[in-house]
Image (cartoon, rainbow, N blue to C red; front, side, top):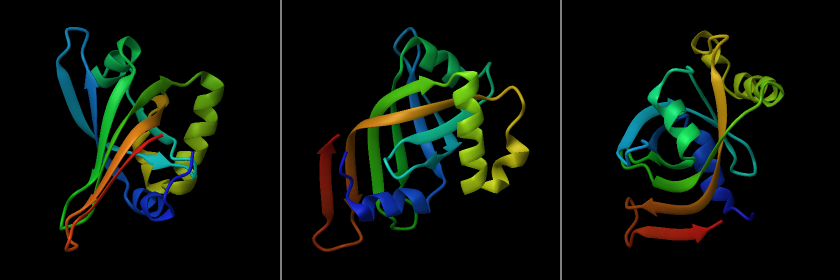
Length: 139
């Protein structure tokens, strides 16, 4: 997938997002999450096994992310597919996350569940410009 380098650079410059999931009875739930992203716009996140988000993703992998939007920063909205990782994939994801964000070490318990998010739609909005820059992509 071809990602605008400036969008990828912005996503990589951030480390928090709002993750929205859907419950089995179709209610939305959101949480602020730390994330890491690779050069292919694959997001890596983790959470404790008993959290609502992990239960929701197991039942319905369709998720949304919002990144930025504070202090006149651009905003990125993403719709995507979450995948819970196997134990072997978890080792690789954890190593990658800690390489990029070593400060997460104290937050990753041995029981953490790791998952990825593969975007299928993205909207980039920068209202600090005149005229505003808004671009949308199906990935």
